[in-house]
Image (tube, rainbow, N blue to C red; front, side, top):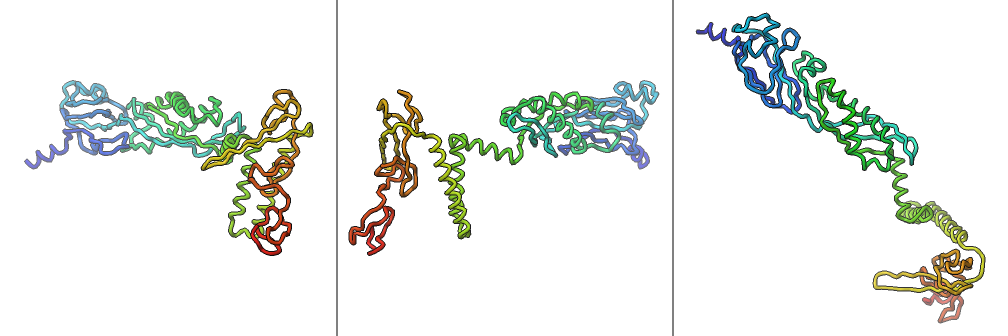
Length: 391
């Protein structure tokens, strides 16, 4: 009995592969030096294909199902071995299982930036990344083109080449699309689909099918992103001039908040403030030209939380009320000009002769008198220089 059991153990009677991994594409059944018994059971599960190899040559291919091996369902191997139909002796052959399921969430991305020509920014570099999925659709071609006769094949063994092909094709797709950099985010789906369409034939040559290509993100160079941020801010603040004024104010605030700046920080703040004042003065001087004098009406409206004001003037020619910022009267076409002076407190430009500043509400008298000693003081003085009385 011992001899018969030994002989029996040399024959393979059950051939199957229970895949316990998530990334194995091809698995070679461990035949080693054993022989396969004619009449052995072969089980091919769903999303698997079994291939018999004879001396490096593809023989019979079995789709999902359960088979009892015989010369009737192994016609190619029977011919290669020169068997007679009804042959019942054990035989040797290599058996490979090919996994035909979807391999999803495979990452791809640009290692180096991709150059593209943009209508707004000229030549720029972009980076992109996403994921793709694929599966084996022609097991025989895949064995011939990719696998060879290795023991097994994992996803990572081939995705490097697939990723490089996808990145190259994506670069072609984005160049051909001529989509502006500002509009790329709206075309992720279209770029992914176009890349997939271009990749179909390349994958078919390997016995593969590319199921999807997803573009998750396309990023621009840091300097372009900063330019976009500035453009967005300009739109929020209402134009280039307003944006520059806000930048100046921010610079003054940061210089004032710097506790270690000392006199240097103070000097920077003063310099920026002077530049801001000049810029605002030039803006008003450019808008207003000398012409007939016009009177100014300032209206204040207040609530518990905010205080707003608007300024209008009366046209010196037709006397219609028009906005103070008008260069011409919309009623008669008269050129509007107003003589301006600086507020003694906040230095805003206001109408010459105004008694109060519409910006800060400060009285515009150049001096005031101490109620105790009668000394003449500046309107901004809080205490008398002579007697120290609060003013």
